[in-house]
Length: 239
Ligand code: ARG
Ligand code: ZN
Ligand code: CA
Image (cartoon, rainbow, N blue to C red; front, side):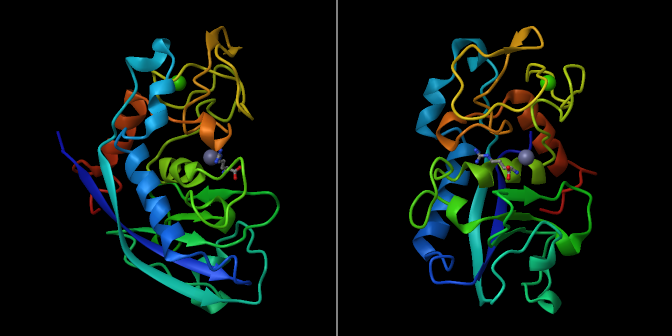
């Protein structure tokens, strides 16, 4: 196989007040959460129901902080149209997207925690966007999204993962065989088993919509889908 994959990370903090100008410690805490979640060293993985332990995956992907950009702005909400990704719009330009993950930390607004671009898109907008109070697990944070799992979820999208319900009804696939079919997102902290589409939902998967402390796993099928991007001809081979 490919062995460990290492992804350099550029974090761009765009803030309209001092709280949104999150600390270096908060930024590093998010890098640490990513490394735990993508290497199955997160302590809460032990909560995985027996039904799913066979497919509990160590994705073996490492993240290293390559640089931090800080930019003050009078803009308080950035939306989801990628304006934060361009200096010409008052944002910060992407840095070497062919060889690094870019994360913009700014207030999106509209109750949106984060969003991501799938592989194969415009390099100028490649990466993920996360609100400051959902980034990392220490500092300026808003429970129940205060364990850094929004970024884990968005990096899952950046690495080609879909939501586990496939964004459709029971027959809509997420293109991953070992995540059971579901007909929509789960929220809060569901009890196990939660049955939809005649099977138990993998509500504890990072690609559902549950609270941060209630999501703690990727599956083997998701691991294979992510890692395929780094093989010869894959969309993120250059990373
Ligand atoms: N894109 C999703 C949203 O903004 C992210 C959901 C993340 N979920 C979480 N528990 N952190 O709604
Ligand atoms: Zn999502
Ligand atoms: Ca599936």
